[in-house]
Length: 119
Image (cartoon, rainbow, N blue to C red; front, side):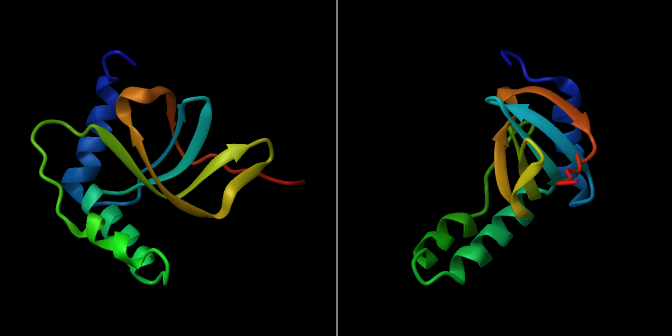
């Protein structure tokens, strides 16, 4: 999107200000459909850092996510946790993952977390 949708920027700002991770959202970006719950960036960074710290091969990268973000102005990214990329009737990964999506790259969105079924 040349100019990010003001509604989604407002939603992201509210998630950031409230430090809540209960807002479910589904977005289309680059042809992919991503569904899950939004998290404040600080919470998202902390969780990614924890996962990397526990990895024998990737532990050194955890410090990148430990650095607090310095940000002026409205949010530029959405931070998803417990998120899945929807592909047909399958959600990848099944257990949910951590995704960061640039708001300017979102072409469509809806409130709510789409469920998928293999029935």
